[in-house]
Length: 149
Image 1: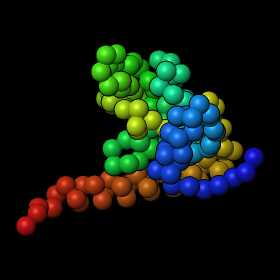
Image 2 (image 1 turned 180 degrees about the vertical axis):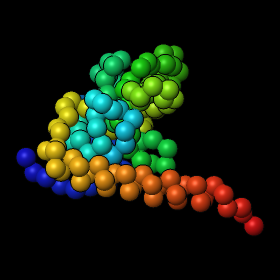
Image 3 (image 1 turned 30 degrees about the vertical axis):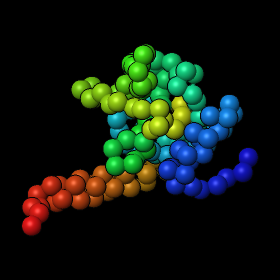
Image 4 (image 1 turned 90 degrees about the horizontal axis):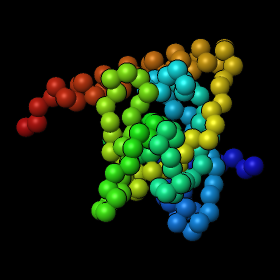
């Protein structure tokens, strides 16, 4: 298997084209959030396979582009829009998580397996994730408190 690094937007575009042509591809990604704990932990490597909307089942963990163009892995809890534009409703596994609408254009694929890191690497990755989360929250909160002129 050949390893390439690509921005998630490029992977999404490629996965859509492959799916539209009836093919499939697999790729790996690593996410850092805690919303799918304990099943998927920060730093786990997700093996994702492209999938059409019709091939997805309620209960599958899907990867999609969320708010701000960031990749998100959440569980598919239902489908809507039988007569109109189809859409999916996904939610994190943590208690109290909000539902998110996922359109077919945002879908990247379905998680087919999860690879865990060794304990030492996990500890380092957990520390890195904590720093990233703090910096992200600090940037978000500083942007929310500023007023436009």
